[in-house]
Structures are given as C-alpha cells and as structure tokens.
Length: 309
Image: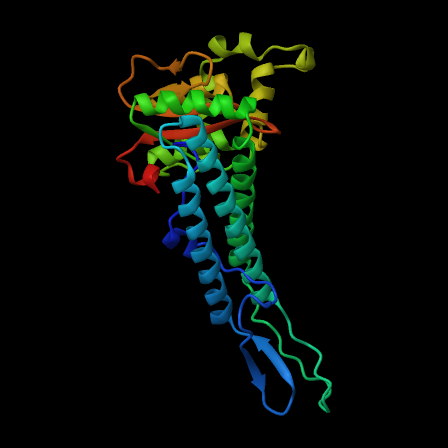
C-alpha cells in the first residue's frame, strides 16, 4: 500500500481524539477517591498515559516489522506497510472508543452509607458529538481500506494503478468522505471551500437548465419517460437529494466554474472536461474503493499543505 496508506507518526497518533475504556491491568489504576463515600472515578490523565505506552509499544512493533522486511522486495514492502497501517488504524479506533466512554461515563452507585449520591459526567455538546461521529466514521473507513489493501483485491489493484499515475505527476491523493457528496467535496477542497456543497449542486443544475439541448439526450431513460420534462426532474433531484454526481455533473461544473476538470482512473484513460480552460482541478475516480459503489477523491500537488496533511 506504498504511497496510499498514510503511516502516522507517534505525534499524529497522539492527536487522535479522546478515547477510554475501563482501565485494566496494563495500566496502574490510579483513581480519585471521594473521601468517606467509597466512590472511585478514573482519571483522564491516567488513560492518556496508558495510550502513550500503547503507542510506544506499537512504534517498537513497527520498527521490528520494517527491519524484518526486505527493502528490495517491493511486494513485501507494500504488504508490511499495509499491515502497519492496519495496526495504527485499529489502535486509533480503540483509543477513540476508550476516551469517548470515559468522557460520557456516569458514575452512579454509592452504597457505603450514602444514598442518592450521583457523580454525573459533563454533558457533551452536539458539536462535539458530531465531531466524534465523523472521527469514528473516518477511522472505520481507514480500517476497511487498510484491511482491503492487505489482500490482492480489485480495490488494491485499482489503487495501485491510480497511485502510479499520481506518482508520475507528483500528485498526492486527498481522501474525501463517502457521503453522496464526494464529487462536490473533491472539487470544493481544491477551491479553498469558497463554495458549499449545496451551492455547487445549484451551479450544476442551473448550468444544465441553461444548456438543456446539450444535456437532454443524456438525461432520457426508460424510468422517466412520460414524466414530463426530464431536465426539470433531473435538476430537482440533483439540487435536493444526495444523488451521486457523474459525468453530467462534471461537465456542468466545468462550464459553471470555468475550470478544467481532470478525472484520473485506474485502468482507463484520464477524462477531461473543459479542455480549453486554464484553471485545472484533478479528481480520482474509484469503482472498488467502497462496497456501496463509485467514489471520487481529490488529487493535489505534493507541495500542497492540504495534500500533505
């Protein structure tokens, strides 16, 4: 998975969200005791220390794996990198789950002579819950990717083909969330997020309406025959649902944004929309990256701060 799986450093692992399951024998159980109540509450700094030790242990394991691999054997090197990425993603997910449990845990039961005494966790804000949910989705997505790349699958073969094309152009893939808006977000991040997804969907729909003679032949299908204006139905769906984008939307967005859109594919030639335009944005198209279907990521120069992050 060389060049694809991003191998996190120890510092990056430390930055992964807050985690936390009940402390076990691997970590000395320090606790805050409520005097006279017999109540114990696990401390966050102790869990962080446990996570630090586990990350250190993983780094030692990674060093052993790297030393044990043959640097001249590219296939072996890729397999080792895939194994390392999987270990890191699993540890990150474990830490995130542990800290989340610690932060939301509510200590109730004090029975040593004191009734109705409860120590309640600090409420987690809606924004924090959204961030944690997104982080969990990201970790799960990376875990699935790492597992898939440890096997010789169509997904792995496609990624190797795309990565070779990116390497030849000094480009780096930028992961985009798979949520039905991946095409629009892959464009959005390259425009410094000056447009929202909703704005890009409306731009595409308006351009299709304005150039209906160009697009209408591609919007006719048996499902919508007899339902009235196919362009009207298509644009309403584009604007108001999470319908995935494809070549029609790419052509429309190229015209609306007045920029050249390149779509790098695994075993097929690169698609170009708006070949005569100057500003160029690059996407990668994946057929096998997720079980749900097609997906778009962004591709940016290696020197880009977004790509390197």
